[in-house]
Length: 361
Image (tube, rainbow, N blue to C red; front, side, top):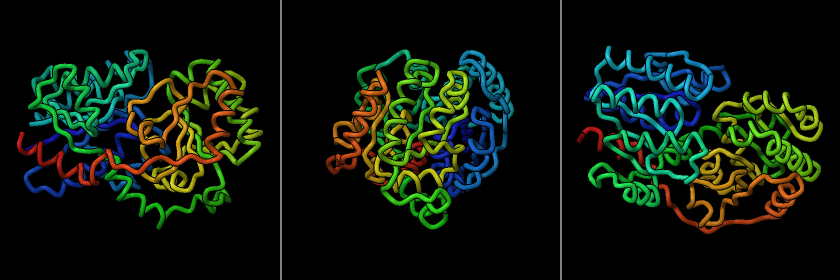
């Protein structure tokens, strides 16, 4: 069986790493890996392939950045050519990026079955491009691998046939277990940045609704700078965020109060996550990793698709309306909150379940 896997962004590299390891250990499977190039610089892409021990892509499409329509259209055209040449039995896509949607659409239009890992997530906010990508990908897919019971219920409510839906758990949990230990052995980032375990807050900001809105980005930057007077704040700055901060005149202000660093590799990132006192993010993946390592998290959005984290009390969703309000919320969280124990994301063997279902077809 030939399976074409389409990835393009950091969270997808992580998810694909654990599934690809199982696929490539299965004698009857040939995996063809396609990298769209959505994240294309070394820190955002190449180092992830090295650290996660993912084989080099069979196809690197080199699409790069652009508007949503332009980027998705270029990916759709390029992926179609790969699929025409390879003629796989399945196309495997992950998550909710433009790469996800382009891979699903290209396959569906060529009548190649699509399997979607991380299906059924909903923020119910159609202003988020990720939400549009999720919904359209799910309804173009033939196998929907849902990470949680809530995701399964979302798909049922939308009328997806029961026979297409499989509750498999979350492959990110597989990755957290496998790579968390590797990070503890190999990462030296705490020593390099002179950080004490539980002595700092960790920040990641990259979503368009935060970076492209000057008012929200000013509120976030101002709030974080206030927090930086209370505790060291480590902020690996995404290229999109750095560009926005520069254009709004926020970079120098932030650099005076925060530890701004370049994006880091996966092992260094999860080492920083494991040892933070608090994580502040707008990333879906980082919210979950915070929970896997039992670190409290503040999510700078209006909602989250990972509702289980809020219900268990490990995640607090805060809308960044003003610097003062944000700083107050983060300071309260730094004072300490711990959620209930629970395990809504499976047993760490999601990848094996996914491959089993793919082989059954």
